Length: 181
Image (cartoon, rainbow, N blue to C red; front, side, top):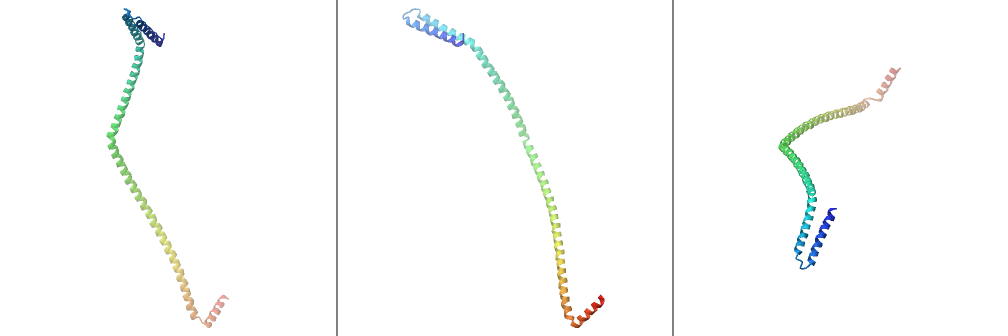
C-alpha cells in the first residue's frame, strides 16, 4: 500500500472507533476502546515515521553534507582571495612608488625630447629665416643695382644731351658710318 492510503486507513479506523465508542453510552469498555484507538493511531504514525523518516533524514543529511562541503570550498576560496588581496595591499605602496618613479622618468625623457625637437625646429627656422633674409637682400641688391644703373643711364643721357650739339652729333654719325664701312 502507498503511504497515503495507509495513513488514510489508520485515520479512518481511529475515527470509526472513536465514534463507535461515543455512541455506546455507559459502556464500561469505552476507555479501553479509546486507548486502543490511541494505540492504533500511535502505532500507525510510528510505523509511517519509522518507514519514511530514515530516507527523509538521509536525504536531508546528504543535502547538509553537500552544503557543508560547498561552504568549506567557498571558505577556502575566500581565504585564498583574501590572502592574495592582502599580499597585493602589502606591495601596493611599493608598486605606487615604482609607478611614480617610472612616470617621473618618462616625463623627464619626454621633456628632454621636446627640448631637442624645439632646438632642432628653432635651428631650422633660423636657417630658413637667414635664407629668406639673404634671398631678400640679394633681390633688394639686384633691384638697387638695376635702379642705380637706370638712374646713372638717365643722368648720363641728360649730361650727354646737354653736351652734344648738332655739329658734334653730325661728327659722331660720320665717324660711326666710317667705322661700319
